[in-house]
Image (cartoon, rainbow, N blue to C red; front, side, top):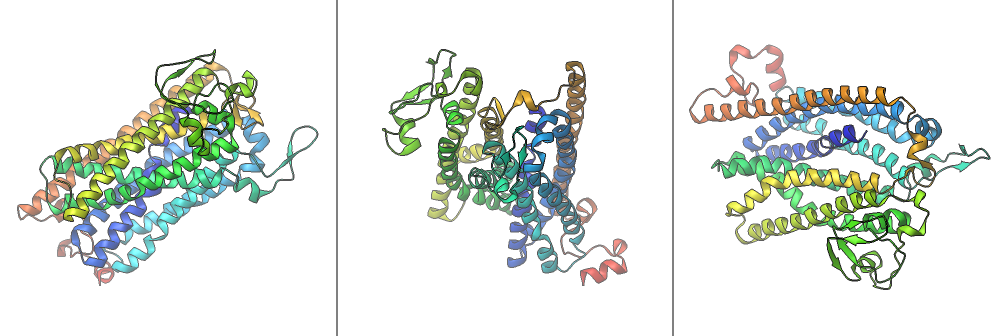
Length: 463
């Protein structure tokens, strides 16, 4: 489950955010009559479709794993929090239909009609995120049920089960995080091109629009991250203690940047900042922070698990702080000259920002799931009670098959993207040389086709 989730989650930012970024570029192209912007939107929509196809495979595997690997959880709690998965499934089917319409609409629909038909795409992506985050938030702060004498959930309140205390902080932190991640990744592709000397408008515009979106959202995400950490402090104090490696309940608790927690409560390595943890949690050094020893050892993460969650959290904070500096650098240059920074070091940093964001996405998932141990449903069901009793040999066989499938699928995804990029580059070079771009590009957005490939139906659509 860790392997499949860690693989699938790398695709999530593009599935959720790329439609919105593509439509933003599409709108710019129509609004300003910008053929370059329309060409970028067309190409991004092709990448969006390939990513969606890959996500079908990885998402389907995850769906089967919920039933095969966690029968205890799904059998007992499925009626309570299963609505989120249903919402995600409906969003998935709607998104598939809308992507098909959007791809088909290039050159076959009137430009603005095509744009308005694509506009629901980001909303369906956000609806899918709503369902998944609602389910995860419920696992962190379960609500909307009562337990009968045998310990089974009854009297389910769907509204309370969906809108749990952690839902709001988790959802907005997740949405903003995946949008800025997609923005930095897309911009990073064009940053590499700019570093290689491709200073044409195509690369400058391809960099500027997604990077601006990401730069604006970076400080917003930092504040949302601070908000969700404070929500964890109030709603899941033991989980907060794990992410901050706090051993004993106390005030004036120091903050450790990195460091390792040992089973006896001692901490080695890292940077100790006196009183900062209490200040961050409650805006005062007198704030009492609950420690791991406030609950029995069987009800809290182990020292190793706490250290893993702590490192994941600190990596997120560190990368987020560096991205704020990068966004300020960009904003300062834009305000001064209304143009991109001139320094090659800026574009080097921008090129790696996307990979750094993907790392923070992984770290966010690790913090959420490992910090909650040993509970799969916080304070209601342990992982050991939820997991399948299938023999170890069968699990290893299944795991091996999944690894092979994922390697093939993700390898194909990368190979397809590289081939598409190479074809587009050749098309652009053909334009510069005076050749017909249609021979390689195939379908220029809202532009004329060669007569030999134009049918009567196509002409009617173009008109």
